[in-house]
Image (cartoon, rainbow over all chains, first blue to last red; front, side):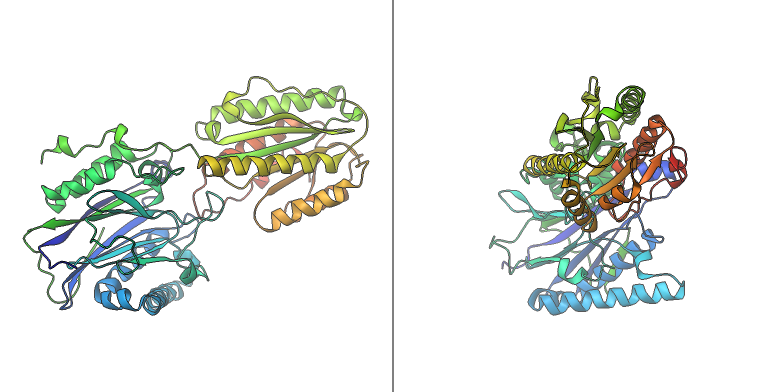
Length: 273
Length: 227
């Protein structure tokens, strides 16, 4: 892998789906970003969660899981990269323990906090790890093309998917990394999203990626994270959001050359959105 | 970068077909259905189509087919989104009640449709089978057809609504087609309320999101079924 000559940038937004807007139930998508530097280079970890429609505390579950998993990946990046099975098992175990404690305190069940997981962690040397459970997905951008890295994980039917609270959650997680990836070169970017925007970004029949994805990732070349996040929010609200659809989250990670580093030294710097 | 340069155009996004809800109406067209029962059944189907069409999501999601059974099972209408339906009229053709043949044909059509969805990259919900009869089966095919529907239902691959019309249809026979939804007897010839209920239920189903529980409108059932 090449020596770092820049840094990973991250922007994104969640907007309430029109169906939840009409019901007044609020947005049940949450995403969290966590930066760290453990001595082997700066790590940026992002986790996007979509609270299950059936779950009583869907948003609380999505908040808990997204922040716990982003922090876990930022802190234990090397383990996730080199010991992927043990790391994934441990991360899911820890997150479910935290969920179980929360549920017990409120005399509720684990399933009341059910949510999906879309997570990517990248390091400044170009190494990366991706975990995905349930619907939503991940697109990866290389210099020559963007492709679907992890498509929505559903059962046979459109309203059946997998959640971190499922007994077989560990088996169902799609785990990939720079060590298992067919492309030898480091990626330029990742787009993580929930099912509310999936149908506008991936053509299901062919798996083709919408031209909008590389263009949006490219915004990081000349705009700062806040500007890109504002643009993502605007586009989710006014362009990508389906008239009858679910909540929408889109997070863009992009390698930016020669950028002024964001100081990640010390404890992981966490931001929940 | 200016805000204008950070606006996505619709042409830069992809368009996928809407998710589909396939529903097979498997209807008795034996001699005993002629006259008033068939007239009311057709009116119920007409109201069903009209109600689904008025729902912006369901009109592009719900696809129905009609299978009739008497001496033979017959495809009256192959799968179509209801937005495209011109007029569906069923006629009683007389003769016996090949209930099992009708159910097997409806299941075959559902399976074929699912394969078409997969080839075309269309996502779909669990198929529904609505079974309505006013008599007793005159062949033994309903035994194998019943175990087929129950197997699919048990695997979460089918939702079955067995409905008896009049007193000649035995609920115990219809119970062979579903372990989850007990068979219900229509109040008189109240097809209209049944199909209105069906359209409301399938419209809600077509808008359900992953992981969402979608209980049946039990109160609504009281409007058309003898409970």
